[in-house]
Image 1 (tube, rainbow, N blue to C red):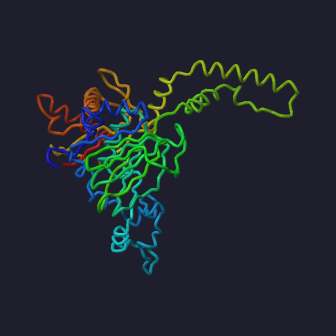
Image 2: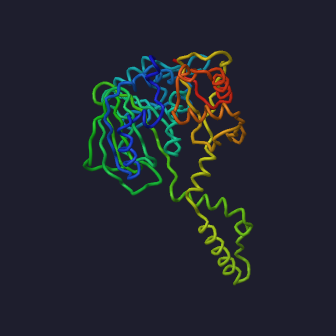
Amino acid sequence: MADNEAMIAGLSALLQPEKVDSFLAAFAEKRPLMLRTSRDDLTRFFPWSELNHCISMDSLMSGRVRLMRAGREVPIDLVSRRKDNRERVLLAKALHLLCEQGLSIQLIGLHNLSPKIAALTAALERELRADMQVNAYASFTRGGALPPHADEHDVLILQIDGRKAWKGYGGAEARPLKGGIARIEQPSWEEELQPGDLLYLPRGEVHHATVVGERSLHLTIGIQNLKACDSLSWLRERGIQDILFREDIAPQGPGDAADRRSTGIKQALHELVDKLDLRDMLADRDRRVAPFRPLNLGFFGPLAPRSWVSPSLRRYPDLPAEGDARIEADGVQIALDSAERALLIRLLDSGGSRVDALLQGPEAEATERALSGLIRKSLLFVLDD
């Protein structure tokens, strides 16, 4: 992986700088957008070999990997057998045969399996302030994993290898809170994605995809934004701190008790609503998002110069401009000394860096100590060359 060219540090690196504004406009307006690029590094970013490592009998049994054909899940009995000890084993030949017949393979939660995907996910979450999940889809012949459907979240599609034809049919429902299979008529748009291309679909956009040629591999990044209705649960959390909202509503009370209780609750609700500030709600959600916590075992000596380090934080922390600092992760306070804090800010600003680029100049020794500290505290991914 020469010069870590397959590392993607964030939104600008993924979309290429000149396309970021176009994406952000479509993201705000909730309209589909095709982003054709000339990049050829996505096949190195997530090669077929990495997908193959994720497919096993355990992943099929756990549901992390699903086999689909014509919109239906394929029983695992067709690709496995039981040994005498009742252990089930995967039959590679049977899996290859199904692929030739139009099988699609869905890998769920790739960000939990691949540190490289997790690092990109963390960078995108920091920039868009949204929760994300990454799935992979491998399809063969003219197969497709899913029938025409809409999702309850936005989707950013990265075409890794092969070609896939996409059709969109508009929104079956404005801003849906649930996805599902949809009836289709004439498409309102059609696009063919080639390796390196990206497609943004807002939630509710009915879509369908089929393979062009023999095979296709793409990633979908599901983008879950906060919604206006989430303010109701946020207000509820604050409301129940008042004993008024924890009282019983007794139907057997005096006739006028319900009227008095209604008046009191309405007054308290008005006070809660008057205090609603979406900036506070977003900041509160940011504080609750736990970072990825890579274990980073074995990093006890000098780091390989060509290794890539990237922050595991999924939101930008509120860090002071100087001095020591603390970060909360999964309810645990992580202390940072001044050098660690400064290096973390530098890496958050850049999205990541090669080790040898960091360890230059007269402060190289102090930077290496800070780098080692952040790695041991699980605040950085270390991606080998």
